[in-house]
Amino acid sequence: GVHVHPIGEPGYLRRHVLPNIAAGAAKAGRSASDVDVIVPVLTIVGDTDSERDHERELVRASMSFYGSTPNYAFIWDEAGFEGTTARIREKQKAGDFAGMAAQVTDEHIAAFATESTWDGLADALAAKYTGAATRIVLYNGLNVPDRIERYGEVARRLRSG
Image 1 (tube, rainbow, N blue to C red):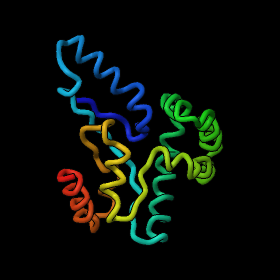
Image 2: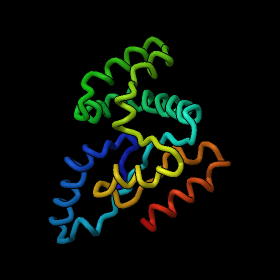
Image 3: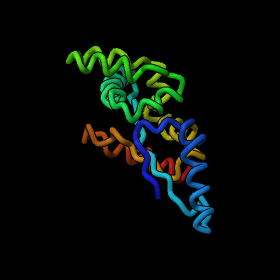
C-alpha cells in the first residue's frame, strides 16, 4: 500500500496520488484496487464549540509546522493557497511560532482537516475521503487517551457504514 502525508488534501489525492497508483499498478499488471491508500487525517472533534475551538488551535499549530516545510509547498499551492509556505517560513525564521500558526487560516483548516461533533465524525470523514482513501488513520486521535473509546466508536461506524 501507500501511506500518504497528513497534509494529503483529498483533492490532491484524487488528482495525483490515485492516478499515479493506477498507472503503477497497471504497469505491474495489477489493479489499483490491489493497493491500499492509507491517509492520516487531521480531525477537529468535540460536542461543544469550546472543545472544537481548542482542537482547531492544535490542528492549526500542526499545520503551521508542516506548512513551513518547503517540500510540501506544492500541496498548499495546488489546493489554492499559493505562497502559504513562504509566509509561514518567514515567521519560522524569525522564531515567531504564534505568527506561524496565524498564517494558517480557517479556510486552510477546512481543506486539510475534518471538523465535526462526535456523532457526525464518521459521516464527515466518509464524505471527505470515500474514493480517496482505502484506510484512514486518525492522526491526532491519540493525543488525549481518554478519547480512545470515542475514536474507536467512530472507527466502528466507518467500518459498518
